[in-house]
Amino acid sequence: MNDRKTVKNILTGETEYVEVLIQKYYGDIYAYCYQHLFDKHMAQDITQETFLRFLKNLESYKHTGKLKNYLYIIAKNIIRDYLKKQDRRCLSYSNAEPIVSNMENTVLELEIKSILDSLEEEERELIILRYYQDMTFADISRIIGKPMSTVKYSLKKLEKKIGDRLKGEY
Amino acid sequence: MRNYKIKKALNFSVPEYDAEALERTMTFSKNIDYGVEKQRMTEVQSILAQIKFIPMKAWAGKFAIACLLNAGILVETQVGNASLWMIISICIPLLCLTGTNEICNIMQPELKSLLLTVRYSMKKIILIRLLIFGVIDLLILLLTAGAAFFADLYAGWNDLLYVIMLYNLMCMGCIYIINHIRETNAVFACSVWGVSLITMNLIIKNTFAELVAGKENMILLLIIALTIWRILTEISNMLGGLQEHEINSQQFV
Image (cartoon, rainbow over all chains, first blue to last red; front, side, top):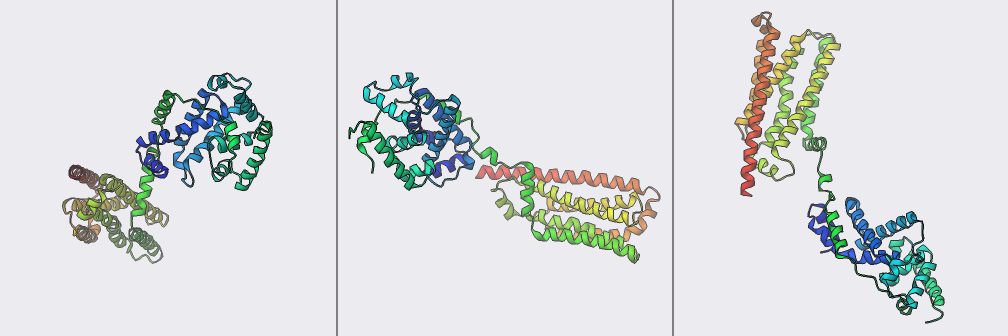
């Protein structure tokens, strides 16, 4: 069943479709949150908040694009608010207890963390959406609200920057 | 094109989420109102929505009667040919009859089965329409009484009570007819009742004061009370009958 129909069914009182919707996108949104926060529990909490915020405002939702992109935007805003509250940067891995516990503690992975940590918020967003969420340029441009040409250009620059950081490995 | 070397270099595994976290999200999501409750209309909204379904001719009829009543007052003040009471005698039953037509239309057997499938119960539709027509008629009568008062045509309580009695008698007769003749000729029967009332009124009015000899207000109040009681009984019977009809239709659906 497509998302438009699922949303319509929920709005007409068929609440069993809420579970269908959550199950469909929970994994993706959780992964997105984790890739931002590197904290499993916080990622789960923000994923939950994303769905609840979406469902509470379901009436105002207009199905014009992909529902998944809409959820990413909500998650992005919640993460931003959370990080503002925490008064720390998105990938501040210095207090890396959850990261170490959840990732293989290899030199390369630590390097990845430090690379992501060195990026600006929007640059990190681009990398997460493109390389971890495997999104198209069109979807990324919708989520971050910038033209596709800007997204392409920024990613090209980022690839060069990260390539340099990886000591000319490729 | 994606840079696969970068993708490979940046790759790390995301730990599996806890099944309890997913369950928790689903549990919380069940406590949210999904529009159905929010979309449900309030009583005021449902009344306003019903106004839209009352055809323009009903409003036009009421407006024309209100104009006629006030024109009668104007003519009476200007010319003074004592035609006001005749205008009132004709207009008050007609005022009631314009609304009655709409109530009769709802009660038509073919329309009733259609109405049973829509958002509101028949009971609610009838009550809302009776309320709308009652309020509109009251406003028209108040406007007319106010105009008569300012034009110094107001003779006393008995005039006001007489108009109320006339209106109540018309309402009572119409509701009785609608309740007992639920066929297409109910409107015709109501019209006959209206004309009879107008004729009776025109004959009786002049001799009424003499007939009751000083107990005019008392008798008028008594008739008004009796008509109100009868109207309420008939409305109650009408709604009770509808409820049975709705239950029966639901059993067969």
